[in-house]
Image 1 (spheres, helix red, strand yellow):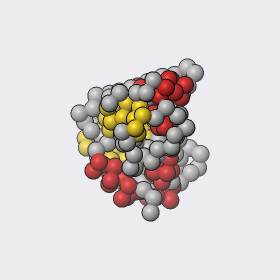
Image 2: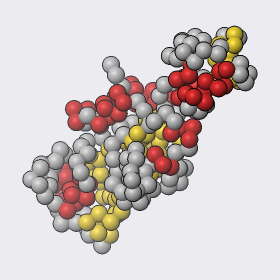
Image 3: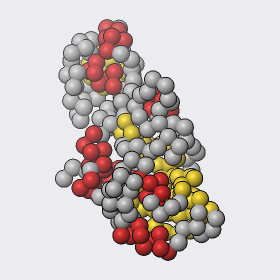
Length: 240
């Protein structure tokens, strides 16, 4: 990789700005000053320092966000605030994107990464990646609903969903539930409850595959995945 690209990706400025740093002799590769912006770096073996501080290259970034309501799951938008707008510059320079979408008014677990291969596998219908949601339902959720979801329900467009695992946490005029599904159709959780005559009034994703929402994260906050979390995702859904 060219040294100007590496340092630009790591947040040291644009390629033009990196060239200025190179020219003043502030960058060394394996102890030798490098001024050529086209100098190629072996990111696995070469030691690169800027102003005497060693820099470490990472190709991929993996972030867990507790998505707040009112923010859209997109990389950019001319009118709405996006989840990428919530990132610090040192993270946004990796040009990450949300893996899948949560509705604008839905909260909870959102994986943000620049690892396109992992994202593709997590979203692939063939992988049947489970996603678990907590929801508050306007209406009494019954065991009949549990059985209906277990068989799959017919949505308003005639689509027959894959089976869903519905767990009633509290049943009443307003019911608390958890629902695990393996698909990601448009507004699927809301439409599944519509199919049994009920309405979702609060929705939060709490799990995706092996990844569990960190409850210590306030709405709008995020953190990098731990090595253990990344390894588990890779073992379950990474390239093989």
